[in-house]
Length: 393
View (cartoon, rainbow, N blue to C red):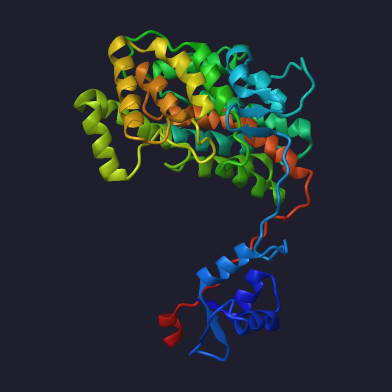
């Protein structure tokens, strides 16, 4: 239940106007036993607010975000500053795509080298990445420099450092090699089945490009909120990494990976049925934006499928066909990341690793864009609800 003041604020009207709605029969009020005034049902207030045609902005509305970084198209997928991500994935290096997102001058040669951070503590990949990001900031004496060139320099250091901590035992990196090549080598040495062939750089680069940005995804919003209070780039990127770590965001591909593992072991029908029973959904399927299928899925699966042996390729196909036959939403990029990782015997968390390193590019683009906006603009207001039991107490 909402108090009189909260209900009026939610509707963007004064209290006398709120009671005028009651007298006209548009709202029902309930006596507040704890104090003078009335209580209103939240659903009633929300319904009336939705029916309003006055276009009034209420105090609970967040800032409107205008962006020139990425446009999402239902049929084409992400468009990075006018360029299709699905086309860039097969023809452009990740470093150049990052430069495109950052609106940097073409042809600029910049180092993607990690700072000397010392020995990385052992642990899960995500924890090592958190450590590397913290250490990047700690070793930058001018981390508060928010000039664009300084911000993108920090982003390159971070992306290289995150790559550098993948794999407990990794080859010596060539600092001049493309980031995708370095990462592919490290994912190969971290493989659960080292006997398989090396991970192709082209597939890793495509995954990095396709995951580089996705408009105002949850982790990107976290970065923009940090930028709005003028947090330095390292702290802002940490906000993004922390949000991405959730199983419903960057961790979704690992759940899809596990689905494929179980499907190969127990059969696709049992794997899908058990997953639906336990989770109520199928990881790697459905997307809130793409109702007709995630275009990134097809682009990445096209590169991943030739890397799978016949048996694993058949498992992936059976999982997809069974899902489609039962009207499950179409597969998304998480399933393609899982197929690439599982099919080449990379670690189960590879999808999140690729996602995190790639998204440094997009987060940085949005960070730079947010610096040009009015600071502290993300100040939402809560709708305080008073239920009857609490009021009686």
